[in-house]
Amino acid sequence: MSEREKEVTGMSIPSNGNGGPLDGAVVAVAGAAGPAGRATLLRLAEAGAIVVAADADAARLAEAVDAARYAHGGATVTGDTVDLLDLDAARAWADRTEKEFGRVDGLVHLVGGWRGSATFAETDLADWELLEKLLIKTVQHTSLAFEAPLARSGNGRYVLISAAGASKPTAGNAAYSAAKAAAEAWTLALADSFRKAGGEGAPPAAATVLVVKALVHDAMRAERPNAKFAGFTDVKDLAQAIAGVWDTPAQEVNGTRQWLTPQP
Image (cartoon, rainbow, N blue to C red; front, side, top):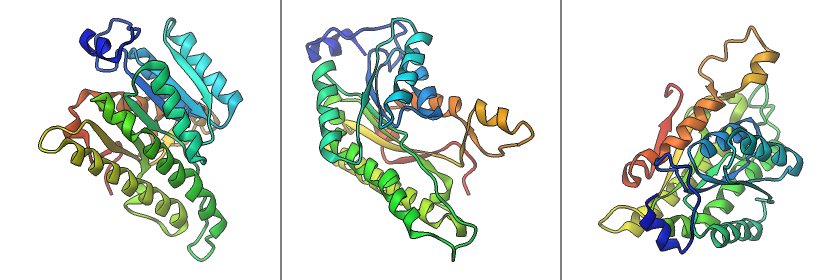
């Protein structure tokens, strides 16, 4: 972020001096307390971003925030317990973030969850009811809450993490795959909104989908030392890919699916 951009916000935004596209950027992370969230907080803080983390689990969130602060002394990393199933709560979080820091340059959506069955016939529709809340409603609420702040940023990013199963569902993952597919469609509709807002020029922000087969982290490898985890994406690599979304112009990112695993 240039000094001129900092002046426009009317704030003095801290910088770690690395000069990258995330230096001084304000990035909100939804679902920040899990392994992927922890890796993402660390990577964004390392890149110089002001990180505003949210999760429904206050204790795990505090641990994740403290870890990012400790790893990168001087980094601004805050935590906020937010119920993202409540649209008003999501809007209040977006409003607080923009008011406190003067801008919002990103929303990374990491809220997850999984339910499946051995066969299609054994699908439990209670699984759908849960996944519809976790994987769809939270996307709806964060996108509606952050659309305007991201557009006002001038270089905002909305980043959804999705799964390859959304494009090639399996019999036992009907509910999960359908929920992920709906979340992708919703995010791409947000991208179209940004495209239209840009008119004949570049969009004011971009919405994109990062697609993985599944995620793996160090604790999983320790628990299953003989497992291959073929096609899985390490949470550190996911965090790197998330940070890289700001390296590419908004018009090239907006409305894309970026595959971090072989495309089926």
